[in-house]
Amino acid sequence: MSKRSSSSILKDVQANILKPHARDYVRCIFLRFGNSDSCAIKNHLGLFQEYITSASKQKEQAKKYKENGRNDNGTLVTCIYLSKFVYEKINIPDANRPSDPSFRNGMKSRNQLNDPVNRALAVDYQEDIDTMILVAGNDNDLVEKKTKSVCRHFKDITQKNGCFIENGERLFYRIGDRKIFTEHFGYRDGISNPVFFKQNKTKTLDKKKIDLVLDQNCGSYLVFRKLQQDVSKFNSKISELSKRLGITRSYAEAQVMGRFKDGTPLGLFSSPNSVDLSKESLYNNASFDEIDNIKYRNYDDLKGNKCPFHAHIRQMNPRNGLLKEESKYNPDNTMSTMARRSIPYDNHNGEVGLLFMSFQRNIYQQFVRQHIWANRYNFVPLENQENPNNGAGLDPIIGQRDAENGDTFFPQRWSTKWDKRKKVVFDFSDVVSFKGGEYFYAPPISFFKNLVSSTETTA
Image (cartoon, rainbow, N blue to C red):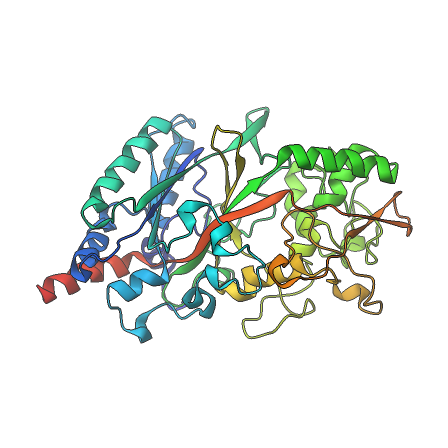
């Protein structure tokens, strides 16, 4: 990867991987090709290259958007992702297929995710999915028009009832001219994502970081999961938790997430609205064993007395190591950083939730391992390994019990007061339900160009 120039990489990588597309409206189009002819599928995929937005084009769009006073709503981002089933259907040799083992197994293999069995998923996700296409823009009518155009492009090879669409729309409030993005539980969203461009005037690609998301071919693995959020149950649990602990509702919310709703990290601050927005990246990416090195607060939370070990952001990213591709579960030398590109959805029938999307180079090391942590009642970060029985409990947001195999369930342990060791056991769970999803691969744009030439040669 390092041998390629930055401009070459950006022209070949699909948009939305190295930087969020930053659009308010999204369509996720899912296709099943059934028993369509292999050459026909290849041809349709190959010709789709004209739709695909590259990272280079996305960068140009962002520049024009700023130059036009942020009034340009006409630019769209379109990307395409392939499941393992497509590679089989278009007869790509095994050696040339994406090699990630989790991708090759597929999400339905469960792979320690504790997902419900297939028949318990939403109907649309019970059959295998071949392709996912993302269309994003700031003009909802234009996004809808483009979506219909994409569906027409694949109509001839899509099986009957083989197309369904998920609609996403960003939720936000404003602080001055700045949009602050949230999700349906009310927490700030999109915080502490990795940045792949150097933060200087040139905004050049940081090649030392892109290995987190790009493989040697300039491709990336996409995890898609539809997560339904039970807002009523969440609010009820928060009310009960705050009463049981004798603490404010705001503190209860912060113990669940690890941040107050406005994004202020609990490990550093005792109240919301304490973050200097210009320094929020520093606050939210600090290691829990380095917090006392930050000048703004001198606080040591290695025992989890203030920000519990089970808090969502702490259990998902212990912030105490680096990604090592071959390493096994060991919070001391691994890190689960990935590029999150999720967006809320509202079906307008009482169902709301999150269309979770993340890009990573290694699905197991970066995504699956997070869910192993989320589902382990006895997960404890390295700092507390001397007391292995002091289990953190399931992640209160996304933790899933292994009901099929009768997994023992242990509730979380919650703090009653600031910085105190006294803990109260309380079950905070089942506020998010997995409805379905799949692992995809985002090939470089050159892959689709090669498909066209190979089809022509075959013909």
